[in-house]
Figure (cartoon, rainbow, N blue to C red):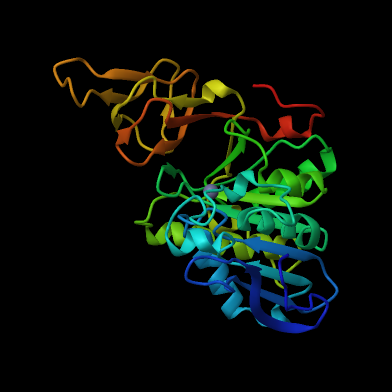
Length: 344
Ligand SMILES: [Zn+2]
């Protein structure tokens, strides 16, 4: 059902809109219109650059918009397709989920051709955009609910060649931390569909919130460009952290449910350590204060392992079951060279 006006084989730069019919009370024959840019410069690989999979995550939306405006075909060795605000209806109202159908685009894959709007977006990626791409870059942050230490991250995919390529591209983002993650909150994720199609998938969690510091925007924009050069999509020479006088990226992993700390009861969350700070097993990482019973001692949230605080809850007000912290454990990068699942 998604209408696409672009010819992805045509040389040069095209800008247009994906259109999805959406009939509502004040727009009987209306379309949802999602901006898309395609730049074809040469015979090299194709990258699909996606921001706004969740509408309340702006770092990737801004980085993709700037790249879509700035890039000329002469700078592109292959082909790059950019969709800055993938869940456009959600981006317009700054929400994680679509206001049109209540769906989470990042749980909607592979999607349905005649499903809800969100499901149709997922289906178009699954059947049209992923098959023509070699590299899929899906830029996330913590949105309004979580704050991450800015990092590139990935799943530990079983295919070793794919895993090597994804690891190298993840490290080419040049973030201080990289993060191996697992899906603790549902299925139907965009990166999983792209991985299953054999793509080189690069994802990020670049901070969070709506008060985004300038240095986080720089990480988003410089990292995206560097990954596109590293993968041969853009012309130029990629930069390493070493060349910038920086220590190697710290590789971490949160692969067990216990790494993701959930609030045992509702309250006001007070974080006790800085993002990116090392923590020891049993160390308090935060406290849940009782709004209605301030005389009671707060509930102490402790780290289950030695690791780093890689993510914290952003709003202080917390409901039972909300994720309040993620503790990622240090991993020797050589472990990724060993076949089979990674166990810490
Ligand atoms: Zn997200």
